[in-house]
Image 1 (cartoon, rainbow, N blue to C red):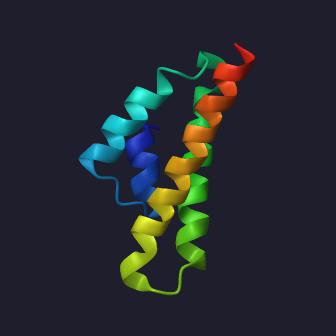
Image 2: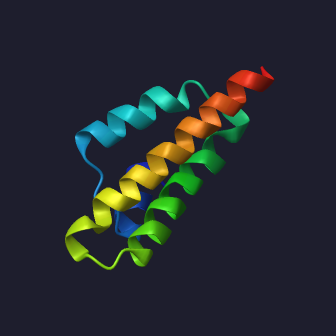
Image 3: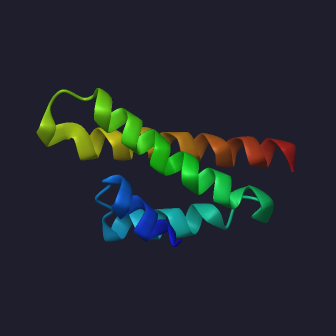
Length: 81
């Protein structure tokens, strides 16, 4: 299943900038870890949305948490390469 389809199925409203961001990030992650990182990105987005009480802020809260997580993964990958 494509990343964008999975995200939509899980309730994440990906913006064009989200997709562009993830394409740039994925290139920096070892190939064998990419699928796990993409799944984690969506899982974190969804779990953060579920914790957010304000309906208007859910997507942005999920997006922010997921983005921060993936940036941390990239930093870790750089340290170990």
